Length: 95
Image 1 (cartoon, one colour):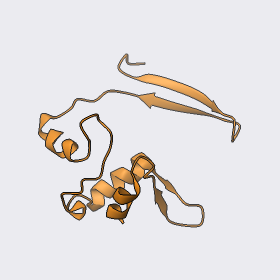
Image 2 (cartoon, rainbow, N blue to C red):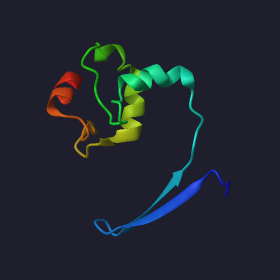
Image 3 (cartoon, one colour):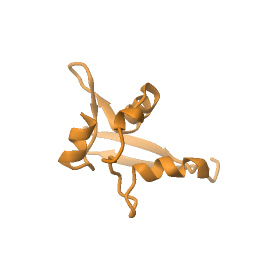
Image 4 (cartoon, rainbow, N blue to C red):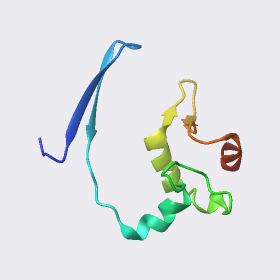
């Protein structure tokens, strides 16, 4: 395995299954820093900006990335977007 790839295996006792993840590092682009800064506070905590129109940033492509990264399919239909790290005000902005 390439040394830049790491594999991590863990047992999930809830479902009696074993999950395997691959970790890797990508290059960062300085051009994306202003966009990242909109969604991170000074300590690196994720935030929803209150001083901008969030709808300008939630495009079909960005929504697809969000679902793939931090979303889940609902058994009875639909998708859940995980917003655990946001406060009530930020979740209301997203609504």
